[in-house]
Length: 179
Image (tube, rainbow, N blue to C red):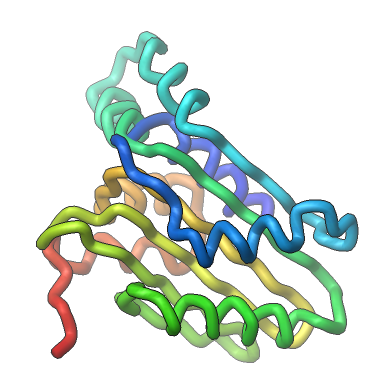
């Protein structure tokens, strides 16, 4: 969980003018004051824009800052060692599948499910990425919105050794719509 939070903070370093899906926002707001969540992170577009003023030396760091500069927000919430993890996962999954999200990847590892969804404003222009993870005892949902480059998210994930995100780099630049 800490790796994912660190990843998100790094991603928060830059994106464009996009808004988070209203249904996803309502889900986060519903649990915003629930102190039983062990992780709650919100990073605003302003925070991302502040990172663009940083000076970096390596081309790799410049590339990461450029990707972060296009982000408008990041939200994460999670619960560890909880009996209601599966119910939270089902609730979030229901919200995602009832909206305009397209599943781009699914990973199952033992009793843990991880799914990635996107919203494309136009072909190849991803405006929101949602990662949903759940097991019998743990739940985590992350949403990243703005102008998103999946390969950059993957590279940051590889550097942070976050399992699952490295697979995003293998995807096409322009995810294909399902018919």
